[in-house]
Structure formats: C-alpha cells, structure tokens
Length: 130
Image 1 (cartoon, rainbow, N blue to C red):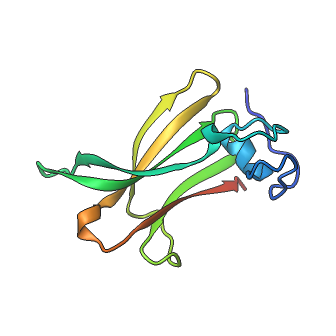
Image 2 (cartoon, one colour):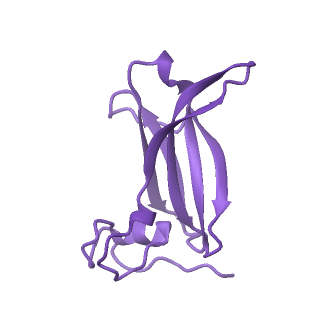
Image 3 (spheres, helix red, strand yellow):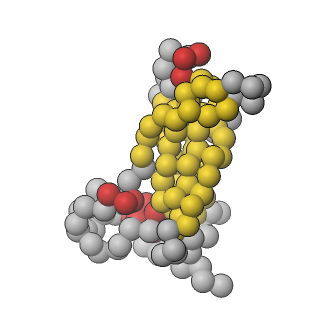
C-alpha cells in the first residue's frame, strides 16, 4: 500500500500556515512549510448543473484537494441553512480530477438550487477514520 498514516496532534499548526496537522495530511499540504499553501484551501463557489428534470440551475459548490495516500482520513461535505444543523444529506458528488502528484481535486455541490433557498452554507469535515 502507498498509504501514509497520520501521526501527531491533529490540532497543532507547527508551521503557522493556518492549516492544522490533520488538514495538512488530508489535503496534501507540505508539512513544515510555513509558506502560504493556497492549493490546500477549500474553494466555495457556485456552478450551473442539470436539475435532473430537463432544466438547470445554479448550485452552491465546494472543491478541495485530497491526498490519495491519506486513506486513514474521512472527508464529509456538509450543508446547513443556519450554521448549527449541519448534515451531509443534500450534497452530491460532482467530480474528481487527478493532479498527477498523489492528490486529486474533488468537487461536491448542494442538491438545492440557490434560487430556491434564502441562504445555505457548505463546509468540509475532515476526521481520522476510527
């Protein structure tokens, strides 16, 4: 296997780059590099997608880089309308594209059209697999 297990305190940010150790491992950031790692930050946006019934609409999206060797990590995209009741129900996988460097860019979207709801939030939850 080419897996690289996580070791250490998941909450530490020893290189002060704004990413804790678990996120650096999960997203494929360079551990110990104190420089900005923009490739490892999630990107929130909106995109046009088919609505599945012959039309299309604009949906909230999140894209992130995933370290393919971090198979001890679980990724869960969650949405909420109030920043309190987070759920993975209502999200849909869109794509994954290899970066040819041991990582891939992954995109998910909400299943609710932006025009159909007053507000919606999206986040990435990263945890160590039990």
